[in-house]
Amino acid sequence: MDSERRSAGGRFRERTLVLVPVALVVVLTAAILESPASAHLGPLLVIAPALTPSFAGARVTAAVCALTVAAGFLIAVLRGGVTDGDHPAQLAALTALSLMIALFTAVRDRRSRQLARAQSVAEAAQRALLRPIPERIGALQIATMYLAAEYEAQIGGDLYTATRTHDGARMIIGDVRGKGLAAVGESALLISAFRLIAAQHAALPDLACALDRNVSRYLLDFAQTDRESAEHFVTALFLDIPDDAPSARLTNCGHPPPLLLRHDRVVPLDGAGAAPPLGLGTLVADDYPDDTFPFEAGDTLLLYTDGVVEARDRAGVFYPLAERVVRWTGCTPEALVNHIRRDLLAHAGGRLGDDAAVVAVRRTAGQPGHGLHGLL
Picture 1 (cartoon, rainbow, N blue to C red):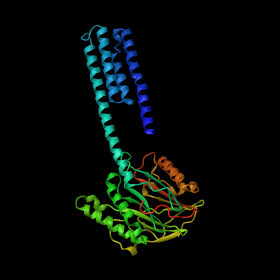
Picture 2: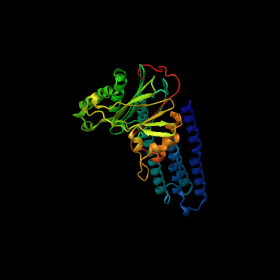
Picture 3: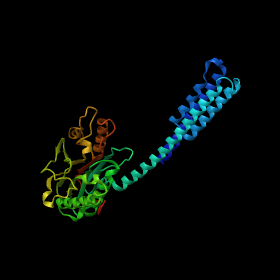
C-alpha cells in the first residue's frame, strides 16, 4: 500500500512539473516572435528539454523535445521560412540537442531499471542469508543493524544469526575478509553451517573447531580456481546464553571483543584473548578460548564487526564506539542500535568504507521460557 502511494505521488509530481517546460516553450516562442530578428533568442528553446530529465522519464522528455523542435519550426515558418537566414542551422542544432537529450534519458532510465532489478535480487538474497533475528528469544531482547559498504548491493560479508538450544540461546557474529558480493559465499556457508550444528556441540570451542573445518574445506575447494580465496578467512564470535544462569559464555576467533553495558558502565569483554580467525584450519578444540562472564537481568551485550569501530571521519579518526554508547546504556536494544546507526553514519559522513553489523542483546527479568525452538 505504501509503495503504491509513493508511486502515485511520483506520477502526480511528474505530471505537475511537466507543465514547467511546456510553459517555458510557450513563453519563449511568444517572446521570440515578438522580439526583433536581430535578438537571436531561438537557442534558448533548448532549456526546456534540458530541464525535463531532472524530474521526468524518457517518454515525457521525448515529448517535450518534440514540442521544442516543433516550436522551432513554427518560429522559422512565421519569421521568413525554414530555409531563410540562420534558421536551418538553428533548427539543426535544436533537433540534434533534443535527440541527444532524449537518447540520454532513455539510456539513464534503462540503467535505472537494471539497477533496481539488481537491488531487488540483492535484497532478496540478503533476506534469505541474514534472516532477521527475532526480537525476543526466551528472556532475551534482541535488535540488529546491518549497513553494507556497497550501498547498491545492500549486502556484504558481515553476518549474524541465532538459534535456540535445549537450555538457552546460541549466537554468532562474524566478518568475512573483503566486502560486497565477493564475500557472500563464505558468509552463507558459515551461517548455514552454524544453524545446522550449533545445537549439536555442548561446548563453544567444539563448535568453533567444527565450523573452522567447514570454512577451511570450502576455501580449499575454491583455492585452485580463485587465488584470492586462499587468503580469505572469517573472524567470528560465538555466544552461549543459558536460560537458568545469570551468565554467558564466549569464544572469540579473531573478532572485536563485545561490550557489556551494565548500568552506566561499558566494559569490553577481552577475556582470555582470541583464537585465530576461522578458515586457517590449524587449531583443535582445546586451542579455542571459553570465557564465562556475568550476564544478569538488565545487562546488555553489544556485538559488532570491525566496520563499526574502523569507520573514519574526515580527519581520519576512528569511530569511538565504547565512548559513544555510554550515553545510551539505559536504552532498549532497538533504541540502542538506532542511536548507533545515526551516530555512525554522521561520523563517517553518510558512507562507510566497510560493511558494519551490530547486534544488541539484553537479558530481561522475565521468566526465560523456551521462546522459539529449533533453528531460526
